[in-house]
Length: 154
Image (cartoon, rainbow, N blue to C red; front, side, top):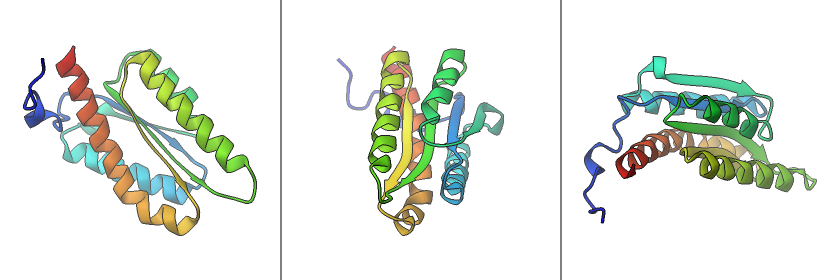
């Protein structure tokens, strides 16, 4: 049985980790702010810049394909998905949000690899802007903590 304190002290220590980031370019001002916040937070947690791989894809539906390629490389302790889907007047919002989210979850389970999903799904641009920094930072912390947790459990 795992004690509550097992690994708690160093779960946010990213010094030995390699992290892959996949950023959707659609809504670039938001996704670039997410990426900047994520990378800064990863480095503040000790992840060396040389151990952060950052790639861009056209949109949220392309993020899972790139995540899969990174997962298959077996070079990463955790991955981060970054994107921004803003509700429009059509059903497209639901399709993109649901399909990208489900694919990201499936990849994490299939590869037993932590994937922090920071693809924002908002009603408008103002909501996305209000979340871009915090969610980028959160994604970094989730990636590092989950990579260390899975290492502790193996």
